[in-house]
Length: 488
Image: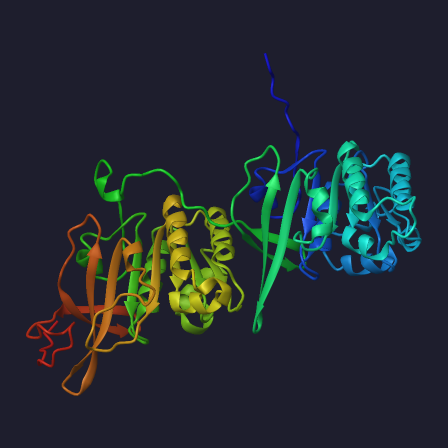
């Protein structure tokens, strides 16, 4: 009977990398890290080395550049993963510049084999094989060719009882093709620049014996090194909608007197709500009430703010909740975000705070914060984000900025209204020479909601709903028929 061989997985220490690798890095595997200059290949290699190296699993790092390893290490010391105590003991750097300058591949290979046999490392890095090929010469007949050298090196790396890494340039180069036949894993790093934004991405092209996360994932290089944001996966399988669940539907209070009744008893738990309206219509005020009511009821919340910090545009009560740790805050105005980065940070904060309410303010600011390379897929990314949050069971309120044209009725410029379970629309109307605000509940899936159109005011206490609008059947369509504001 055949028995499967268990392959030990190494935790890489790189945030997000284990997730896209399928659990970790296979021990004793031979891996390639490729990409253009400046994308972060050496940073990733050093981050892996410092995380994985131990006195029992030492690391040997071969450099083939003319500059000494000390110069390279001076820059790597800026990262928090750098541990000077490991250098020269657990970690050893070997400069192959002299062997490479001789132009003899056989001498380079002999030096590497000698160092490995003497140090007995559990980790071996070669940075970079493209530089090595560019410097070496093949004039003498007794030398092995560049392709043969790479193939021999790949065989040696695979045969050593060590987890090995070959760092190099773009994998499309024909001279490095032989090494791909013996490599167990291939990490492809890339980057794109548009105006003032730069987006870095990583793809696990190949990893033998493991189910990796498909697709391309974004990453960022910060003070802690590389952090990867795995693409948010849409949960599979059909799950019953809250309306179809057994028993009465749990509902959340909105914090606006009268609005719960318009929604049919409150917003169903786990739903996504879109609040759409023009500037100044009170979208953020409504979101504020939603979060404040959650705090009052012991239901923690999270704000994702893309325009202004709560201290600038939100009431002081919300800012106080944030400072007190009762509401979590993700506030960013960067211009090179990916939705996957936001979703991952949001999920981490939801779990840490055990949040049940989430506010995204606003989708308009979200789109501006997303890097231009992702904007063409913004609608698809929104779908993935809403699906992931729904699978967590949180209730989501999203605001959407709309231009009030008075002659048409739209809910979102992204065509995302179908993604949400409920919609509240806010509008302006002209009444007796003044602008008045009106509000309506457009839909609440699986729930009987009010079809009334109601005036409302924004006061120091929040939103104050008025009675239903009468005598203005053309209010939403913009037909100029006079309206009468009822007495409250």
